[in-house]
Image (tube, rainbow, N blue to C red; front, top):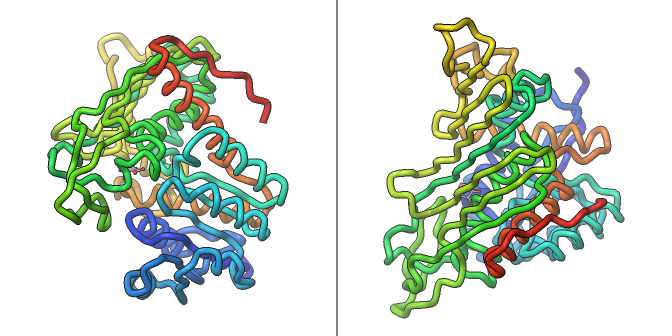
Length: 390
Ligand code: SOE
């Protein structure tokens, strides 16, 4: 293998996802031989003291206090957006206009119209684009996809997917940006229903129609802000109104005829990050649980009678997508590796000139389903997904 060309990354934001992405860029060349390799060139954030500390700690060569300056820089090839949702569109469109490749955290935008403008900008400027739905890149999820594609489960009848968290159950947990509509667009819905919706699109296919319900259990909270990870601090003594959903649940019909049941909530006490799905087909079923992410439970209907049941496949062998790059079989990997695998695809895309899935087109389709569920909640009725030729 020759010397890999360097892709100089400029990342906007540096907290929870900034840490996950920075780590992925740093570790990627350690595990994978890609034709191009990321370089942590510069990170941007408004608070100079904090961004400098973040740059030093995470290994970025330089920092900026204005993301626009980052985009102007000639020594940046890829813009990585890990900021709150209300900034995604402006940054992504400016980056594309400047001819930079773009990767953006989910949900792509505040609404479908913004997401479509983002897709238009990256296409018009012919830059590579991706959205960071990292859970697709767990080897067990990739293996699930392979089994479905090979027809091992036959026709798919059901998907039931849940994303259960509990980090805001305390009524005194502050009103952080993730709970303010003008910054986040929606609450649990865009934050984590978006992930299970992406997994469903990846594994089962496109949505046809949806009907949902949402609720905000705690309607007022003390003002505060995120400090990193899912931690927060209180600011002033005053309170503010929570104007996003705490929970979002919906039913779906897929174009293939499959049925889906989805539940995303931050009020499922004891569930820290319970991203789980089960898929049932005519010839078998699979189950996955992020908190046990190396394993895929597989049931095949043609197993010998008496030995039938779910078996546990530990997806750490070289037969399992991405797994061979890491450790010998049985030596498990974790959350951060999903980001490394995703970045590997991004580097391949940049080197070969295509936008790997999930890309901004997936982001637009995801946003369309999110919006259809919101509309269904408003109108208390089923909503059909419009035909989109993207
Ligand atoms: C908080 O709900 C959060 O950090 C999400 O924003 C991420 O997308 C999810 O992967 C984990 O939970």
